Image (cartoon, rainbow, N blue to C red; front, side, top):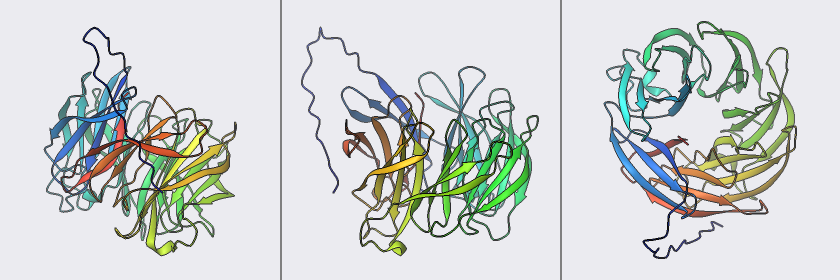
Length: 376
């Protein structure tokens, strides 16, 4: 059952200082209007508000934030609304201290690259951007200010459906998740160019299948994936010498009792800021079937110990339900929805046994909401 909590804020005296910390985020669209939203979460008032509606020169999609050379910030966005190559397939925006966006560059001319479903910016020099789009993978160089320069490498994978990626904490390896081939690809990243070299492809064995997204523990020992086909969250151990992940036979289902696997497709997996918890979500394949949010406890080494809960969301989630923990506390996560178009903030109970919706922001424009990235 979805738990929802109302927050009532009383009138404050004019002499009362407001000391609440606010935290900003961007959330994008998928196939909707060419806009991107700036949101603000207040962790004392427990409110989520629309701060700014940013008009864009091209359709948005998957968002990735790069912080480099101290505090310079650049936001990258794939274009999931155009496959003809007539629009930029990857766009960069500089981000100022007030979370304003300024267009800084775009790459065009790549037929099919408008299906870019994931992009990630490596956090060390040369700060290149990696892009996955169905059957291919690209590496894109950036300038000193983070703006896009050009594609330096393109690799194709026959019969693949590349849907997500994750960097090893040492930034030496890139893991790419292939739903259709049921494989995790490991590539080594060149320190100078950012280009990648094949290392291995690791099969995902039964009963786990269809790796979609993943995240690596900061200690580099474990890779966690969420599977679109079998609706699991699963754990792999990473070999320290080679970077190759091996299935641990540790996994948890993201389905409730009696739910038919074919009616659902799981979406996202992410670590809490303390790395004590692993969040994962599923979606319904139609509005008839509800999505869900699950929490998993990790031990001190990072291995999954138990599933704390699995709670239905209020909708199927559409193509989203891409849970994103805040950067500053294990207590809250953001959950974008694409069926109805909203973002919610969920709060974890003190005993970690459940979570409740404490803020809801409607952004129903026909394309919102894709993934969300926190600025602070």
